[in-house]
Length: 472
Image (cartoon, rainbow, N blue to C red):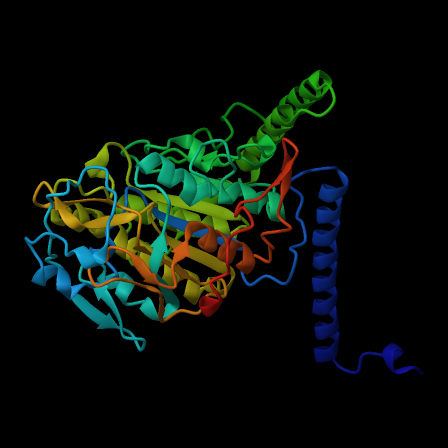
């Protein structure tokens, strides 16, 4: 008798064969569902990456307004030695929005400590992030092209300084499709204090089809309203209503219409979320130990902790890109420390330090950090000179961002600014290099990820980005 046809010899072999068979059935079912989505012409159907990926999802913890590298991850002892003096000419020039030529160097009251086996220095504002620094690659030489919020925020998200171009979240969704059809695959969780200078356009899909737009969650305790079916509405009745709306929309489409297609997809997604996804947004089911890890249920961490935890729960269920925004509304409610760097950064760091560290710890212990890339940073840093005596102005010439997870080699510092943190002088890293590296970890080639718009193949990185090789 051929070996592959031999009878089962004992109970253990029978159970092993049976469970393998169940796994095969489940895998076949999942593959069949994906094939159906692709065959239906669904633009959100999963797509193969260009090469083997390290990550499958991104969480961007966006510190809006411009966190100071000088008070967080880039210690500069010379600042205190030069405090109250004009900037020495050998450091070169810088253009600011509010700092004048008569401004004086502003020292820092922060202290720095070495953390982890890597011994990377982190400010006393962020001790919890310091505790996970061995998982983090600190990029101390980032730079952008603009010194005003709106243009810098557009460039941070889309690689361009003007609105109307797709954000990195939309590009990722366009390149890879959606892993889930019951949750929005690109989600923005805004700060409850209000909108930012660049507004909603910085997150948007630009000239890509509207189906790749983000889902903008509501701030506060209920990020999505009306998630449950009304008590007097039957599931079958709601399904019939959705089918009627779909048929009416399809009847109205003349040729290809991405706006109508996105509307149809939105109605279908809303129905699936009401029937399949309420559990994903109910963090009360999390163990108390997990809630405490993030800082849920206490101030000042509760709000940001809830949103970071929600981002983890969404990524766990197949969401591709989640942006968790810290800062909103007028300047001082962001990391925009024009008036008082101490008051502003102590307050903003207190809200975010534990939730961000908790996110990394939670992802790691669940085995998700390897497949989830976490990005931390804002649209620029802060100036070495004082503004109004105690504040710092916007600064785009050299500042810090960091990455963790998703195949990133942690426990290292890449690049450097000069002795006062004015210019990126060692291994400068532009926003487009950050974008290219994110795409690379997701298995996407920046040259191949393109979209024909007005006769030109457009790309997120304008074909100028470089992968930050030392961290991948």
